[in-house]
Length: 276
Length: 299
Image 1 (cartoon, rainbow over the protein chains, first blue to last red):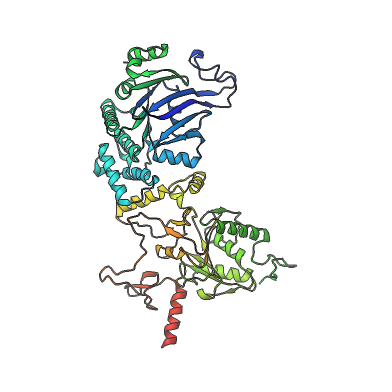
Image 2: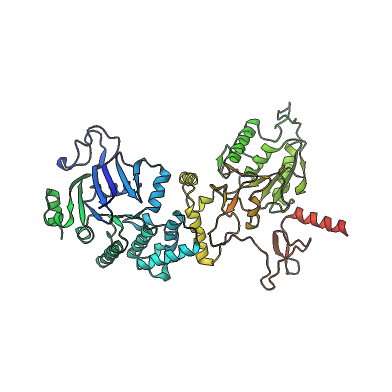
């Protein structure tokens, strides 16, 4: 299997940081706040590999650093140290040594992000179709007819009624906003999709439909996905391999079934057994 | 008139030097103009001075003109195509008062510096003429991004997708692009400018022109330029053509003509005459007068 994303020793420390930060935080110290300088260690030495066409889950409680990790990969935040390599069409992009324009170019055309909160991923002041059009325009599609056709097709695929594509997404239900976000993330045919708590805050039936939609799209397009969630159901449903994080550290990783049925780390055992 | 000499020095007893502004202000303006010409379409920040008119009434254009004028220049001031409106007449009087030797003129072909609000003269401008625009809002991105720091980064990256999204929304709602003035225009393949509130009709005149176009926004403290022989392309989709106002009568399909001079190639103002009938007249008063003179001379 070919890798699409290699993350190597990624660290993000909020605050001044000191040499002791990494030594006095982590699961064994039961904190992610450095007692010497007060910095918050959001992610510490995270390394993993994502293969082409694979769906990798990142699981953990609130504040475990799973969202921070994905934010850095989508250039919403800068890492304190560490590297990530994005393998795309024969090029290996060293993500954090690119300049800002190259980073945004990559993010706008070759990566897709679905946020928990649709207001982060969508522009509520322009229509649903306009949101799709924006991504297409960023990737230099300048034909109105083509943009319109692609937007219509994408929204149809994510089950947004065509009659509503020219309405503002702020008037949509939460589930439909999330589907517009997914359509937007898919619009440029990006090989890498980052999903940050996509079903949190939606009711169960809507959650199930969104998950089905994501599964179906993954099967059709073969897109690689990084799925961040604290929901064991989502992990079980979507992912083949899972990483468990706590206090910014990756404490366990392996096949999803293995982790859910036979968790090794104490925290993972607790997490799995506490599921309703 | 104040007793001032043309070297810019204030003589004993005179309140102001030549062209009202102090020499430091003029130097600042000229430096900014050079920079603006060197980077076509880039908005150059500058130290905008207080002028004896309110900001928003053409202070940016006025400062540019004052920095450009020398005692041998002839100056014309246009407001919406006319030379005799309050704004234009007063600014022209101000130049005559503070720049001894500068002649005010109404004729486009006689002027070396033309300050304008909302129009480009119909008569093609020559290489020895400069057109100065009074600009209310210099940044075309202001409608899509409220954060000024982010806008500057977007300009640097030529990240203008969101301007096209506005066009997309327009096409969806009206099947055509409905921007009537301040049409976003890409200069020299990179920066997109707000060409001040000129009608779409005037936008093609920016492209590969012989003259220098300077834009000054006094309130927003920005100067930018379209140098001579520079590409100026109004933004649009590949399959949607940019069209200027055609002034066709919806019923007959014929183009309206100016009721004074009969011109069928000028930008027309539409209004109701004393009998309530719709009539059209050249917006550029100097052009209209010139045509009338020629017609009378021919008779």
